[in-house]
Image (cartoon, rainbow, N blue to C red):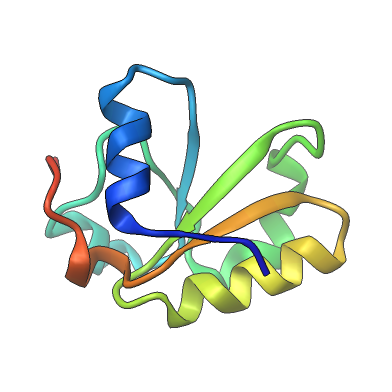
Length: 98
């Protein structure tokens, strides 16, 4: 499984690169703050919503600590998607949230 640190993700955002962030936390968790631009697809709905994702795009998966996003990364990778897990999740995130 491909992984990135929270610092690497933050550097991508600060360099204005176009990245696709998928936050797999529950809606109430995301309401407390998410990385700007991240799309919320709770882990429990990922299988039914994966058709919203484009296999030609790269996605970075985010959750609270890295566990659920790791599950999401493994699942989507097995389905042919280009995905990377953000290690440490929002607990290690020091960047902007909204």
